[in-house]
Image 1 (spheres, helix red, strand yellow):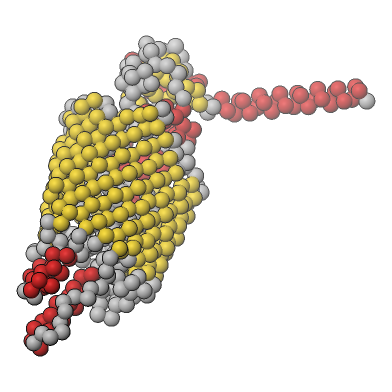
Image 2 (cartoon, chains in turn cyan, yellow):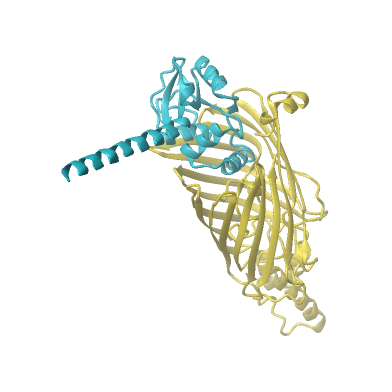
Length: 149
Length: 399
């Protein structure tokens, strides 16, 4: 009886572990990192601070340094995931948001660069920029300031 | 967003620091009345109802905007909109034309034509794509037709903890030619607006004042002034001749993404036929996939007479009494335009494509207390208090 309980709980733990690994694997497949140049002194950021920069509501980091956002192209999964996570905005809501700012003369959407590699290169070369890429594309040329799981 | 996503076109047609974008609405509206027109602004020539039960003129418009980045600090914007005007033409008019100087990342100065920041949606009310309902409720603005000013505005962005603030001050003037003879002139327009944003919550408080002259019904007021002190008093009381109009409004919105709710109230004051009125609007919606069902309620109440006792006619010779009675009837017609109305609406927005939204909206509009509400072109048999059912279909796009 004791034995069977022990083996049951062991099996259960193994199952939990397996589920955890599977869940983790599915999560890390679309894990995103918000990046700055490795030469940038930018501090770690909260997701609302990142959202404010990408939505054109703030042009500064908390320490006062001027920052500009680099976006992934309209229609890319990375972009849709990013805005869903930091701002709870669907592609249509985001389009409406920028249309509102554009047609009231209050701002333009961030410059778009296609793909993780291109975003990473541009951000790595320019300390005043901030971008986002899939975590799998991360390397030492850039530094993550926020991880979006 | 427009040409930046199609670089080939940008390269071929415009310098890289120029950007052309546009917005528009194709709309059809049906109103089940023959006694007045339902429309979206008092500055329209016609609408759905008396002029024909179906109308494409209520919501249809096309706008184009050119943004030019001159340097990191200087930029210019020109926005032109074509829609049905007071004189029934669709001749494009300049909505925005200003030069912006970004003094610091958080302080901007604009000179030129700038929209007034009166209500939550005042600056983007013509861009149907950016909001859920077919159109912004007209009740809160109480029919104040001043939407932009030629002058300067200063915007200052600042923050306290996690709350973002934007404070704007604007000073200017405007001249609006409504038709060959009717003009609206506003001088010493002063507007102050404060917007706060904290997470999903945003709010705006605003106040605006202007010296307004509208040369509409001039013959009526000139006629009244010939009837001695009583007539002069009526003309002074109701004419819109260098009258100070003030407006205060407070709006709030909560929009966490999957749903939204908003509320806005405004009060307009003037010693003129435009009168004093209080308006309120509520709205809520739920976003499910590409669909947004929504509902709204709005109402405006005139504080003051919606009909006049007019000139005292007792004891006048018959000919004068006849002329006086005609003037009194004219004054009553004019006072009917003081808005008192309520509207309940339900609708559905469908984001059919990346930059196209289709909307279907049903609303019941009821003018009250002898007022024609926000309706126009009321016929002799128009009766206040009769509800009107309005059905609207629109296709909104941005490019």
